Amino acid sequence: MTPTRRNRLILSAAGALVLLAAAYSAGWQVLVDRWRAGIAAWTEAQSASGRTVSTGAIAVSGFPLALRLTLAEPRAKDAAGNEWVGPPLTMTVTPFRPLEPEIDAPGTHHLTLVGHAPVEISAATLTGRLTVERGKPVALNAVAGTVVGMGMTLEGLTVDVSRPHVEPGAAPDAASPIALTAVIGLDRLTLPEDLHLPFDRTVASAHLALRLRGTFPTGPVVPALTAWRDGGGTIEIDSIDLNWPPLSLAGEATIALDGALQPEFAGTIRLRGAVEAVDRAQAAGMVDKDAATVTKLALRLATQRTADGAKETKIAIGIQNRVLSVGPVPLLQMPEVTW
Image (cartoon, rainbow, N blue to C red):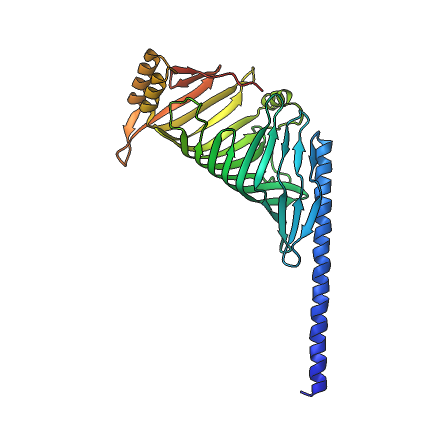
């Protein structure tokens, strides 16, 4: 190969690389513009629905390997006046997965609910992945570590939330439509010292898989809950596992709201340590001796040995008219929920 030809090849390769770099840079800027426009359109759509969402200044960085958008002052407020204000939130997008941003938002989150004092919740780590389709969030996978607030400490939290995918032309669900599905996991939740319950102060672990049915409208909480209930809204707990010494349980249940917007609960639960929990409740004065005796008798009658030799009780648990019942036995008067 002659020197002249070699030089031409080198120059051609260099030119191609320059063109590729220019194209990539232009594509990166297009991605920036689209994400900025998408965020602006989404916040505007929230305003049309009665919610106020703002981001503060948006800083852009990460070129060339990623697009990083840092929202300086994210906040959201609904029509009822409930408000969340977060720490700076960073969304990182790669050019190869432009609709699945990774989210990083450690720090202190401020939550203000109407009629209640403001609450601060801090997270040492908070990361997640958001999936966007047709300009709307459809799934969120989040992981948090060392969450502190309201007198409680949570070592680990995982949340997977998604909207169901509905094929065009599919037949409607016979029941109320599924608004979202969620899988939630907790590790070592330490409760406030002044919370008197017949259990240890620390919940060792909890895992929950549920489906939310019905349409939840925007606006003040009470009218929204009423409309959701009247439209057939329920929470279907497909599985729950709880390890809260001395009690551990697993099962499934359905939660709804009664005419007074108080929770109703109906489920089948498999229990271990239930008798000890009732003994603790009696010792704490939460149930009287007669109710405790009848409840423990019902529990023992329903108790069987499992394959690992442990004692397990399978029994129906319900809440109706704010009364917690174990099997057929009314056990506790539940506090009224004030919305």
